[in-house]
Image 1 (cartoon, rainbow, N blue to C red):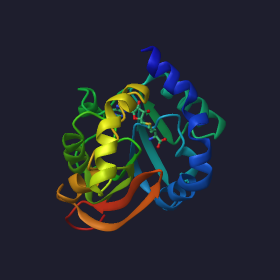
Image 2 (image 1 turned 60 degrees about the vertical axis):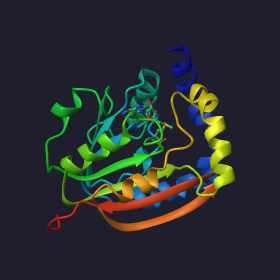
Image 3 (image 1 turned 180 degrees about the vertical axis):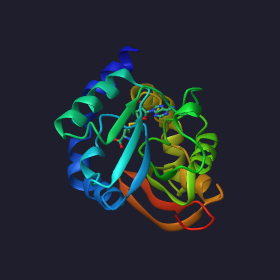
Image 4 (image 1 turned 90 degrees about the horizontal axis):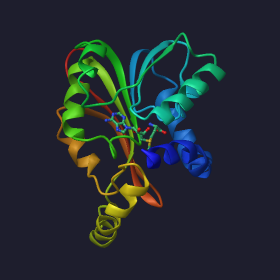
Length: 209
Ligand SMILES: C[S@@+](CC[C@H](N)C(=O)[O-])C[C@H]1O[C@@H](n2cnc3c(N)ncnc32)[C@H](O)[C@@H]1O
């Protein structure tokens, strides 16, 4: 509880330079062209909000109260209260089933969140169900390194890191998991920022939106 509070309060400061140098422009590229009904998973402090254009309606979910209150402030500051609906919930919690209906979403956004949510495979199954055919799953995640040595180092560091970073896992093979999740790959790239990162857009198969 205290750890979550600490993490929530200091998250933006901790991420300031990575966001400025690497992540911000990648977020902009992934998010600014999206349209329609969007689910943003684990909005955190609302870092993605400034990249939404005026053609989206967003449902944002966030289980941490501290993060959610920061995101609520950011939404107000950016005058996005009409277009971003925020809910205090998370993947795997029962109320999620009532929040989103099948085949209704144009996009699901996961940035730096599949490293933390429990049972990410199950969550991705739900995203697929909720997306319209042709809807997009937008991803920017850190992943387990592909090299044996660095992978083993992160495996060893993971128990300590996840305690500090509110459950974030350093060694999830999210890229591999997504490649087997039954989506069509539209775009992918790998990049490094201390950790290896994976950025991708997947599409739910079926007719286009
Ligand atoms: C590293 S932060 C990333 C926040 C934001 N997506 C970003 O790009 O800055 C991870 C977030 O995932 C949230 N989270 C943890 N468990 C979750 C769950 N089951 N469903 C949705 N979000 C979750 C955490 O509370 C935290 O805000």
